[in-house]
Amino acid sequence: MLRWFRFFSRWPLWALHALGSVGGWAVWLLSGRYRRRFLDNAAQAGLPWHAVLGAVGQSGRMTAELPRLWLGRTPTLEWADDRAASQAYAQGQGVLFLTPHMGCFEVTAQALALRYGAEHGQLTVLYRPARHAALAEVMALARNRPGLQAVPTTLAGVRQMIKALRAGEAVGLLPDQVPPEGMGVWAPFFGRPAYTMTLAARLALQTGARVVLIWGERLAWGRGYRLHTRELGHALSPDLETAVVQINQAMETMVRACPQQYLWAYARYKAPRKDL
Image (cartoon, rainbow, N blue to C red; front, side):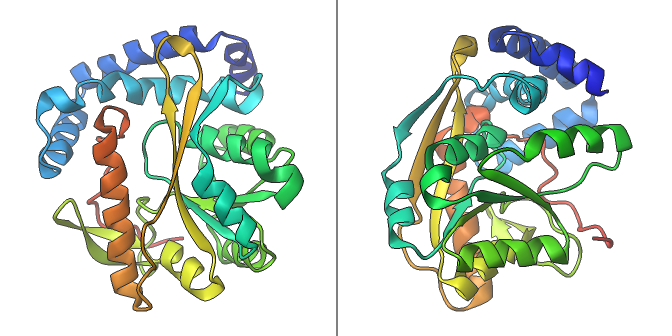
């Protein structure tokens, strides 16, 4: 698998995105289950079909771009607005970056490491190790780079994130990822109960870290990515379950801003698995 990743990592981004778009539509046409989940999730958010049509091809681009992002040259990056991130770093209390399954969440971590790593220390990101040994090898090789450290979804990984925040560094995670049983609460997401991680809220409440919302917009024709940051807009409630709801609401707002790049087929409302 590493050989194939290296091969595709040399492709121009526009070619990978073109290939990914074809793959995204092929999955849409061939998998009724995938299609139903996609449409059901969009309908739950109150969005018509035409508002999310672009997300079909975008989901394929998300997969096809991984070899380039993990093993190839860094693509073109531009910042739409970095004020929220810069101001949060300046506070020196640690920064918690949150992004939904939207746009290119792989590139957000790389962009933050490149822009802020030298001055403010490394960014620690949480990831779920791949079950396939060959893919796990690729992930281990690619995700750790200067200014960026990936830690697994284990207690040891969580401890590393807490340590980083208390040292004034930054961490990043996807708060709309369904956690294992016992590590979340049922909270509304677009009006429907979804098992939601408590980790993001716990990290912020326990360490006093500043919460910043970020997402990487995938630009057309392989032109690269545009990074968007914004403040949460209000303090998190000291009540954990209320804070979880507030984070879900923030994710909803981000998704509504660009529904064409959200991963609508993600099984957001599934029951949690029982193993870590």
